[in-house]
Image (cartoon, rainbow, N blue to C red; front, side, top):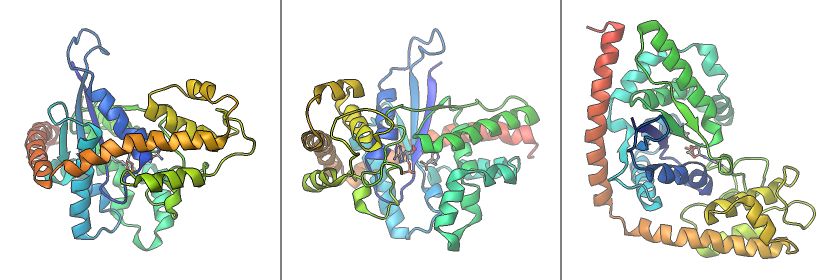
Length: 337
Ligand code: AMP
Ligand code: TRP
C-alpha cells in the first residue's frame, strides 16, 4: 500500500524560508516517490494530501478579505514550490466540513490537561491575552481530525508540530481502543537540518511569521535586494571560522539553509569554506537564496487565481469523497443513528 501523507499550513502571516525548508521542501521530495512496488512497507511510495488549513488560522482573529486572499496565496505557494496537482491532492480545509465534525467527536475523548500541556497553546495565549478562545485551546484536536480523517501514515512537519502529531497518535489509539480499530496511528516525518530554521536576528528563536522584526525571516516574496540585505545583517557568532557546531548557533543555522537549498551536506559546505570568512560565506549564501527564490517567484507570479481555484475545486471533490466515506464508518462506530 502506498503511504498516505498529510500536511498543511495556515493561511496567516507571510510564508518564509522556515516554512519552505521545514515543511514544503520535504513534501515535494515525498511526492516524487512513485506509489508503486508495494511489496514491503517502505517500498510503497507516497500518496500525498496538502491542505490549506483556514479553520486553524481563524483561532487568531483574521480579516475576512485577507483570509480569502491568503488562502489563495498559500495554495499558490504550494504549486510554485513544486507540488504537482497530478501527483498530490491540494484542497482547503473548510471546503470539507467533515474536518470540523470529526474534531468535535475527538474533542469528546480529549482530556483538558492534555491540551493544557501544549507548548503552542501556552505560547500563543501568552502572546494574545485578549483572545484565548476555545478554538485556540482545541487547535490540536482539529489537527488530529485533519490527519486521522484520511488514514494518514506520515505527517511531514517542522519540529514545532511534533507535540501536535503526538496528540493525534494518542487520540487515534484512544478511539481505537474505545470503539475498535478505526484510525491509522500516524508517524511524524521530520527533516533533520530543516526541522528548526532559526531567526536571522536571533539564532535562539525559530524563524517565525509572527516575529517582531522583518530581519528575523526571509519571506518567500522578498526581493533579491532585501534578501541580500537581510543575510548581510544577520547576526553571527564570535570567532570567524565557518564551523558547524552547537556552540555556534548562528552560523550553524546559515549553513543549514545553504545546505538545504544547495542539496549538499553541511559538512561539504564547511569544507568548501575552510580559510574563508563570514563575509564571503554570507555573500555566497545570499546568492544561493536569491537563486532559489527568483525562479520560485516567477512561477508564483505566473499562476492565475482562476487556475488555483480550479485546482482547489478538484481537490475539494476528491477530499470530500474520502472524508465522507471515513465519517460514515466513524459515525457508525460511536452509535450515531
Ligand atoms: P506555521 O507557519 O506555524 O503555520 O507552520 C507551517 C509549517 O512550517 C509547519 O510544518 C511548521 O513546523 C513549519 N515551520 C514553521 N516555522 C519553521 C521553522 N522556523 N523551521 C522549520 N519549520 C518551520
Ligand atoms: N498546526 C500546523 C501548523 O501550525 C498546521 C496543520 C494543521 C497541520 N493541520 C495539520 C500540519 C495537519 C500537518 C497535518 O503548522
